[in-house]
Amino acid sequence: MRQKGHIFDVLVILVFLFSVSTITKASESKDGFKRCEHIVKQWASSSLDSEVKDDKHVLQNLLFFLHVPRTGGRTYFHCFLKKLYASSLECPRSYDKLRIDPRKPKCRLLVTHDDYSMMSKLPKDETSVVTILRNPIDRVFSAYEFSIEVAARFLVHPNLTSATKMSGRLRSKNTISTLDIWPWKYLVPWMREDLFARREARKQNGHSVATSTNPYDMEEMVMPLHEYINNPIARDILHNGATFQVAGLTNNSYLTEAHDVRHCVLKYQTLGDYVLKVAKKRLDDMLYVGLTDNHKESATMFANVVGTQAISQFTGSTSHGDHAAKNNSEQSSSLIESDFDANYHQSNSSYQNSSQISSAERGEATKENMTAGKLMDAYESCISNLRKIQSERRVKSLKKISPVNFTKEGRLQVSEALLQEITSSNSLDVELYKYAQTIFANQHKRMLQNKIVTEQLDSWFDDSYSAYSWESISIAIAIAMLFVLLFAVLFVTAKRRKLKLKL
Image (cartoon, rainbow, N blue to C red):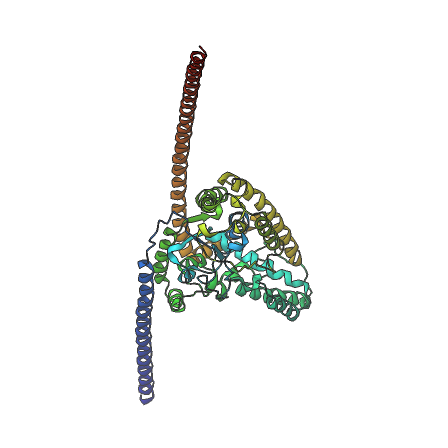
């Protein structure tokens, strides 16, 4: 009986301790949530209070292109912006915490993967922001594929140590490589290490060919997609990456409170609604929001909304550019296109009003009476060349991990369950993308309305000019005839006087 009583007492104590522990943890969890809720609410409130004073539809002196990875931003930079802005007008690069201060150098164009917190270092009233968003599922696919593609380039080395040393030499040069740029500085080394580990495992096991035909599930060759999306690195950087970037809360943020806000949102998912609200407000305040999935329409809109205003700014002070500036811009563009991973062009330029820009600093926008239509023609030609270069590099990289070959058809082999998992992990990005689609539709309506108004005004001015021209001609003829008649009268009168004098 005593033994049973002793056992009962021990059980009671254990139950009591468990209950106390559970209550304590629940209390701590509740306190932790309240603390996080306060931190996130405070940040969101201060972010939403900051209003854009000037007309958000008007291009300001500084254009900040917030480049969300894997949205096609590189083509916009090379095929639009470098044709509008000369290289001397580009701000020094700020990729991956290089910590330049764009307020000190004088420049007109900033293109970077830095998040919206960069605005804390820019003259806000003189800055316009543009960005492009992509369907979140497609962006995850693209990030996964690009991580593998870039990492596979290192497989020419016999081992990981050799590859790491080579990448170190690349980064030691006075250039900015893909390995320096957020988020690839985290994703590529991780994937590179994984590829080398799998290659070594194949050698040891005697396997040289993948057993699966699904390119997203060839674990002998590369990290399977399901493993990739569930890794802590992907969860921290990739998932909901567009929302965190637009909100200014990436792990590359300039905000001191960004780490605490990110930690709280990742720990308590319901707090993500505050981040989403801020990100939507950011999109509302932007000059232009493009969609990767509406490529043609998006590019046309960029040419009409951003391109025409940039052309107007530059041609407003002078109608002639300098041929050397064009050559400099084209050479710089060619350099970057030919070796994207090895070099990002940097320039020491100056921030100034459009009226202060010399002819030698202008891009192609001032050449040959550039218009939105001509800009689109140049864009189509440029993007065709870029796609060819990118395709060649991709094929060359993927040969090193053959038979892995990422295609649109290959994506169809991914299970519905995995697609749902990606969607669930990117719920904030899904909602932000839907909101961007609404903004895009409104931009399109506004562009069409402005086009109609412009055509009406042009027609009116043409008619007015035409009428004015005929009136001017009529008046000129009348005046000319009056002068002829007056001259004739004076001539006859003078002749009569001479005759009288002779008599």
